[in-house]
Image (cartoon, rainbow, N blue to C red):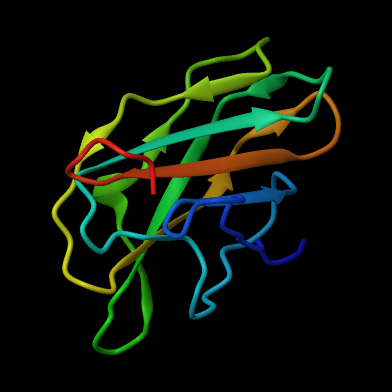
Length: 133
């Protein structure tokens, strides 16, 4: 079991992606997850490695970073439950979000299983002009 490592996809400053094992734990680093400053909405998806499938959908457990204390905390209200099995990926409908400047959002898998390999979690942040950022 390792800590999940987040990065910004090329060309994006707020959206985030992480490739992790299905039992990896959430890392509470300063720049982990997606930055929600100025966000209008968020879309999340997860996918198995190429040519692999999700065998048990499980959940993505949500974490929020408080910009004042710089601490991460569980946020069960934003947990996402998967239903896709036998497919490579699962996407959730986007949701509108209002967050204070500096708030970050991250996820960790719970009860997710894949046929082999790892999963990738993508958090796509959209600004009020409907641009992915």
